[in-house]
Amino acid sequence: MEYHGTRLPTRARRSEPSWPTVMATTLRLWFERHPVAGKKGTRGRRVAVAAVIGAVALGAGVAVAVVGHGATSANVGAPPSAGSAGVLGTSAATREQAANWIAAQVAASAVVACDPSMCAALQADGLPAARLLVLGTAAADPLGSDVVVATSAVRNEFGSRLQSVYAPAVIASFGTGAGRIDVRATAPDGAAAYESALAADHRSRVSAGAQLLRNSRITVAPGARAALSTGDVDPRLLMLLAALAVQQPVRISAFDDPSPGANQAVPLRGAQIAPLGPSARAESSLKSMLSFIDAQRQPFLPLRASLTGTSALTIEYATPSPLGLISGP
Image (cartoon, rainbow, N blue to C red; front, side, top):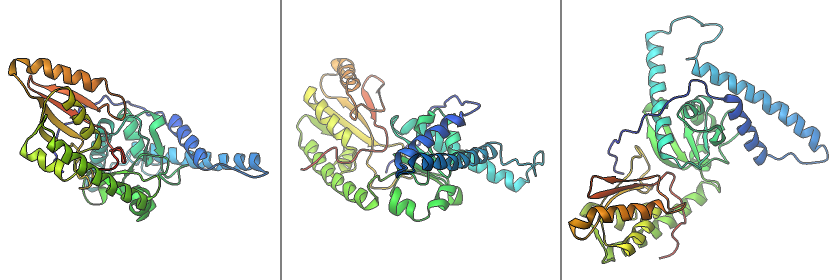
C-alpha cells in the first residue's frame, strides 16, 4: 500500500474531556447488547446497573490516572526517572498520532472502541462522546463498534481473540513493539464471515477495475492500471469514476491512501484525476466534476474532494471501506 506521509491537519485540543458523557454512552451500548430478561428483570437490571456503574467509576479513575501521567497518592510530586519519562513520552506521542489519524480518516458515523486513555485522546481530538465505546469498563468486548483501537492494554485484554474473532483487519498502524497501536476494522458477524466477504469483495473489485480499464472514456496512468487490475481500489472510488466518465472523459493519474501499516487486503481510498479535453476548458471541467462529487450521498460522498491547482482533482474516502457494495461480475 502506497503511503505518502501526508501531514494531517492540526486540531484544537480540549482541555477536559467529558467523561460522564462518555461513560453514559458506554452504558447505553452495553445494555443494548446485554438485555436483562426474566421475572426478576427489574431487580436484575438494578443489580446490573449497580455493577456497571461501579466498573465505570473504576474505569474513570483509571483514565484520570493515565491522563495525569500516572500520578497516584504514592507518587504525587515525585519526579519520574529518565527511563520512565522516555517510555511515557513515546507512548503519548504514538497515542496522539493515532488519535489524529482516526479523527481525520475514520468515517464520521463510525463508533470507535478504545481503552480509557485512548478514548480520552480521541475526545480531545474532537470525537464526540457518542462515538466512543470504552473498553475495560462496561464494555466487555468491542462488538457494537466499527473500529477498535488496539493498544497494548486492549491486546492484553483480548489476546488472540482480537484478531481471530473481533477485528481481523488492520487498517492503520502506529509505533513499534509493545507500544504499537493498531487501528482495526471490527467484524460484526465474526472473523470468518468477514474474511469471506472480503474475498468476495476483492473479486468484485477486480471485475469492476477491468471494466474501467476497457472504458474508452477513461485514460489510466501505468501505475494506476496495476491497482485497478489487481482489485486494490476502494469500491466507492470505482463506482464514482464510472459515473464521472459518463459526464465527461476522465484521466486517472494515481491511486493512494494515507493509511500507514494497513493490511495489503485493505483497498486504496484515494485518487488523483483530471478531465480530458481542450486545456482551455480544464478549469470549468474540474469545477463541474467537483460539483458532481459534492452532490453525492453516502456511501458515495467522499471524506474530502478538492482541486489540485488548476489541472487536477484529489478524492479521498473515509475508512473503513464498505464490503459488498459491488456484487457480481
